[in-house]
Length: 135
Ligand code: IDP
Ligand code: MG
Image (cartoon, rainbow, N blue to C red; front, side):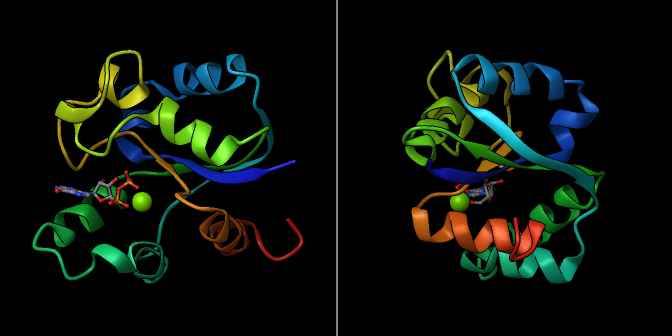
């Protein structure tokens, strides 16, 4: 079965949206097979977000992602990588369709509630990064 790395970001946890997001994932038929709450270190953030490190908004993303704990999860299901990206909605809240997690609850470009791996290769890298090689 395909699997992906999903992370509920600090804004969602502060706003009490963790249960709502988990419910959406489960109601879509996906299985959460591992989960843990933790605080992101700057070292891990720089690895996880290496593709946006050169962007002007990066310092704000570091502060945002360290503003509280995150919930990291391994989520399994048929075509779950693509399916979770659809459930999440577009990165920027104005482009995120109604009915998606970001489209329904995000109102800022940076603070967009949830992360999901964008490819099979990155899903395995991210699961290993956050849950270790035996996950
Ligand atoms: P994704 O989370 O939809 O995969 P990425 O391009 O991988 O989007 O960007 C990682 C994270 O960086 C986003 O989820 C968001 O928090 C932040 N980000 C990306 N683009 C912007 C932007 O233009 N302004 C502010 N924050 C951004
Ligand atoms: Mg991404």
